[in-house]
Image 1 (cartoon, chains in turn yellow, red):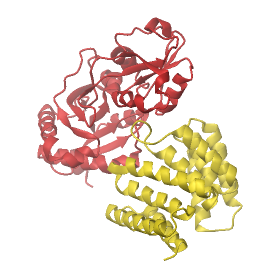
Image 2 (cartoon, helix red, strand yellow; image 1 turned 120 degrees about the horizontal axis):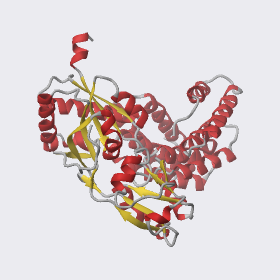
Image 3 (cartoon, one colour; image 1 turned 135 degrees about the vertical axis):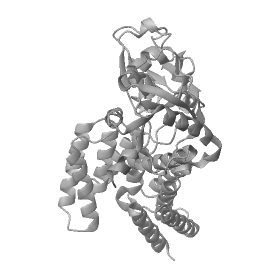
Image 4 (cartoon, helix red, strand yellow; image 1 turned 135 degrees about the horizontal axis):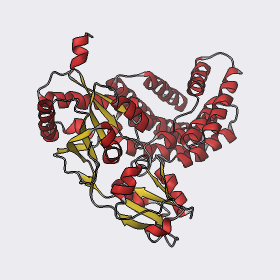
Length: 191
Length: 256
């Protein structure tokens, strides 16, 4: 398999894992993704695609094994840092966007690597690189909510909604719209 | 589900304000715990249900339900709400990496203005337990009489709070034992100093709510929970627990 094929396979595993509720299946998806990530790194150890999808695979492992999640999340952040150094614009500023989400959602110090302020900085970086990509704006909205800026978060969710509405119909567009609308429906994002 | 079946269910409400974990993440683990506890007590498998709420207000609302006979809460929550909710402690949790008791540590800026309780005028205390001012003032800082204008704020982002302490803002931070132990890992640790430390206090308790569990059932459950220690290690570990011991609470909590 080529680097592109391996990356696509991991992306597909991640999409399935997002909607999978069975823990055994999640375990298998994480194992498959990690195997493909290792194969990708063996072919092209410095490629942003391999570093980035290795991070995504580590995220799947963290989700499948919550008791060992901290180590996987720390490794995930390291891999994202390497991917960002290789190509910060890969996957529409994916390294900074995913790093932001990990830092915002992971258990915070001292229990885990979560750091809402660092997450906010990373989300701002992703938006600066690709301001028109709705997931970057959604990540910024989540980071603003987590750091207590409710007004800023609502503004960002509204902006993400507008950006998504301007795109042609697709499954991704519907997912981004749903996420923005759910948060706007709540009125005050949780933090 | 019939009315009779519903009536037989006792609900255990888990509530840990300020600590990580959303309801969706934690619910499978508290469900598993309830099943194991019921089995240990020899109760029907569906007779004990569990529900998790990460917020103080959400937890209080759930504890207001008449089926909510048991509360699993941090000691800070217990101190704050024991009187109003008529909580009677059943067992005390033995938490992985902490134990059955912990000391809370008040920290301020190294070389800063705060050197005693009286020098805290105009300051704000940031803490994961800030939602429980009774606990902060009368348990964690019982020996540190605070000036009247000191504010107490709840935060789930204690790292941000510590950055504010280190930067010299008029704030101090009250840390639980895990947070205090992690201080040395911070890049700005040298800018933080310990001001005072509490006596050893319970970490978390399971309590009967408003006598909604009969005494014989409460006693049976107490025995069963203590018995869980060795037989249910994996279930307990998923909630960062090692087991339970009989409650040994300080005397300063207002009685129901």
